[in-house]
Image (cartoon, rainbow, N blue to C red; front, side, top):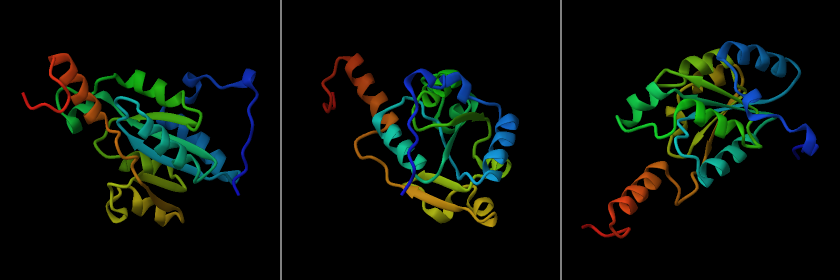
Length: 181
């Protein structure tokens, strides 16, 4: 059974202190691994935070002692999702994710895939959403080569950033949700 540590209310860590440059985070994670801690890693755009993200990150954290979330930079999101994205800038997305109780560290990456950052940070557990077959998860080879494991977490149905954006666009345009006109 996983040990749960209680934090006193007056000793809560500010979200901004959880956000680190990659090089600094790499050193911190090495110290944690050397002390026997299990470092869990996931990544994503996290453009509009919703309950599906929270449930996903809470489950990811349950696989280890320390959860690292690498967030795609604005340029990376633009290349991956299109010219209208991201909705929230990278600084805002980092602050929101860092503010979650289950997240220990946040960092940015500008590449289109997390391969380079996974190679550098060397997590013990790599977590991705259930829409990724395990054998296609970027970074799997690195993690497994170092004795780690790769996990899939089922997506929470009914939540998606694209769905939220479409709903907002429908409301703003004055159409009833679900109507085709």
